[in-house]
Length: 274
Ligand SMILES: [Zn+2]
Ligand SMILES: [Zn+2]
Image (cartoon, rainbow, N blue to C red; front, side, top):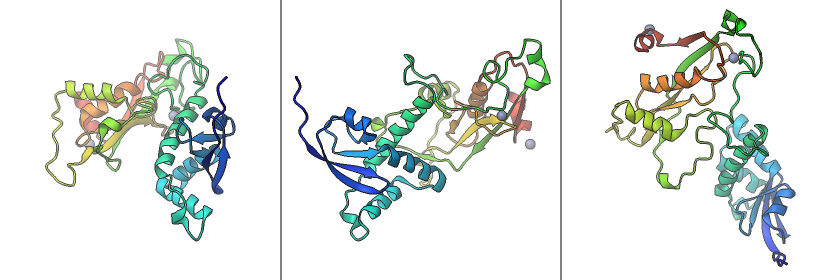
């Protein structure tokens, strides 16, 4: 029989501050007690499920960064000496990313399935736009009626810039192409094949940018982004980037739908070479 693990000190992070526990549990028992360990091997730090949910809500609704959130927890633990409370910023970032992925997998019913999620399968599309087989079941004659026309709107955004990673080899992609952004390797090989030179800018302010913005496709009536259609821009809003987005949007849950109305602020130029 395996010897029980030795008792050890573990710091647990909760919305009420940081608490110290002596535990002789394995990580599985931590999970059963709603504690998410920062490491699986001999965990010394754990986050309560509650604090992870709270951080995601604060991040979404209040724009709270990971470091601000950890500062708040340290302040709650000790209002006089917050700097003496251990800083678990890096651990929070890592665990909260895994937490988001696990929740998405759970919501999409992947807990007990034997297959891996497909492209865009961890994101939701519009519940109101007709998607045959999902929220309506039109006959073959009905589906060609105007009612089942898909309306799409395309646009770019130049505020979502992305810097080059300092150590790209350390990056692990948890949701590569599984939600709204397109899968990296397939998109990169598509871009290479289109013979658009991916020149690096000589300007100091822009040299570090891996991506100068994003573009995507959404349903025009309700503004819901189509999963697996958000693309990175390498330099401006190129037609090749938006083509890739539109090509995936036109396949998304479109069974037998034959008509699409597409809105795009530069359609006058875009449509010419489509
Ligand atoms: Zn819609
Ligand atoms: Zn125009």
